[in-house]
Amino acid sequence: MTKVKESSTNQASRKFLAECDLTHAVRLMSGRWKLPILYLISKGQNRFGMLKKVIPNITERMLTLSLRELEDDGLITRTVFAEIPPRVEYALTEIAMDLLPICDHIRHWGLKHKQSIIFTD
Image (cartoon, rainbow, N blue to C red; front, side, top):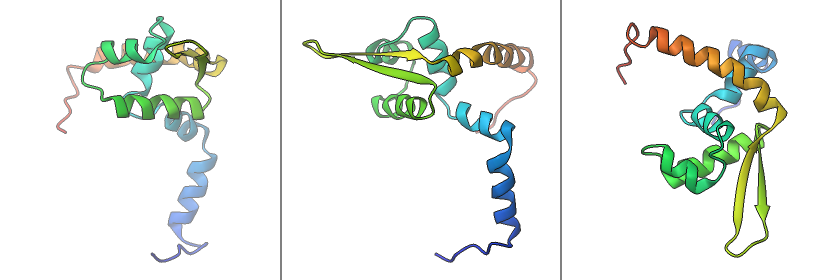
């Protein structure tokens, strides 16, 4: 693979996007399952098994990866209880709590425009 030149427009675009606050916010929320998972955790579905039951068609692998990403991004915390069998619970961080009203606005926007915008993927 060739190295990208420092002066390339691609490099300049990457630098701009890395510094853009909006892009940063969207990156944290992006992913098919992140927002539904955050919403469900906020409503008390805070264990892996509970999330797996209420999210239709998500694989265990995808749920695990999404939860890890949310934890790495600082949006959820993971608490392991030393019990037999082991119990793990997820909770929203303050950052994620700040995100909930924004998610609610996005949800209302989606509901309003759901019929007018049809995805073809």
